[in-house]
Image (cartoon, rainbow, N blue to C red; front, side, top):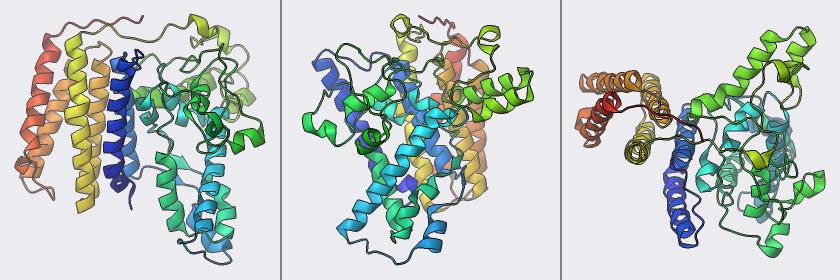
Amino acid sequence: MEFYQSLFYATPIFTSFIIIEIIWGRVIGNDVYHNIPDALASLSSGIANIIVKNMGIYITIIGYTWFFNKVAIFTISPYSVWAWIITFAALDFSGYWIHRWSHRSNFLWQTHLVHHSSEEYNLAVALRQSTSSLFEYGGFLLIPAAFMGVPPEMIAVGGFIHLYMQYWYHTQLINKMGFLDKIIVTPTHHRVHHAMNAEYMDRNFGQIFMVWDHLFGTFQKELDDVPPVYGITVPVQTWNPFKIDYMHWWSMLKDTWRADKWMDKLNVWIRTTGWRPVDHDEKYPLGKVIDTSQLKKFSTEISFSLKLWSFFEVALVAYPLTMLFFWMLSKGISLEEKVLFAAFSLFSIFTYTTSMEGKSTRFLNTLRLFFSMGIILLSANNNFSFNLLTYPLTPVILGFYSISTIFSFLRLEKRQIV
């Protein structure tokens, strides 16, 4: 099963749970979706991630199949219970260390930063995933599974299940769960992980089982007198997932350029997260949060109508377009078609998330409208393996982009961070 095929099943489930969380949160008086742009930014980040992933834009540094072919002394049956126990134990062990390294390495932090960039905590945050995860390097951590003969197909299927099992605990609406807290990762553990309080920083890296955090000394329970403060210590101050996905590397490049010593230029890339040359925090401050109790959450002063329109951008356009893209992939389309359609979808996300910040998007909206018209005309002239003019969704989307462009010229931009 391809990744995009698994999303046909997972996406409706994820969406349903978000709707339930919204309703239940309001019923009990804990609205965890009060910041609408933040939630839409999370969903948009997830859409961007799956588009890039399904384009195959990443490099695998020695994958599991290579190790399996080299070291497996026998092959175990996928119908064996022990085979699946070994599979999930290996995936969880690998996931723990990859997760931990992504927090502790200055370079790797960029690939995971977006997931922690929200200053809220809800199921939508689980979908905040990066487009900058360009390297897959964890295959060597699965060598024990390869040695014991776990087939690559089991690792692939188990990987989907293991990934999707990490969704449910991104919530504030489930309290501590008793004995389960001692065995598996539950919402209380992961709230700690997403917090930037000094007591919670860089703790609870486990993904399914808590054994690794206990074993390697990174466990921290949620304290009753220390409410989690979510986000990262250098706030991103944007809803645009592409800015978030590359801003840390950009900051590192600037530190490298400004560093006087050659060793400092190297250390920027190989030291722990947050490392900077000795005088850079003073000369080139990044707006780091020192006291979490004084944190002012990022927000933008935009009208209700723009928030509603942004919701339509995600729910009625970006999401259906992504599903259409997956359907096209299942039918087998050319590389040129993949690139063009993916580029348009990503550009559309860039456009409306910029609009959510109250910034002028007249140029971006106009360009998006012509971009969409160009794709439609190309498909109608038999340049593609599909003709978009035959799709009922096409006039709706084209009309939506036309109205959005008109509104961008009529709307008065206003932006305020509070």
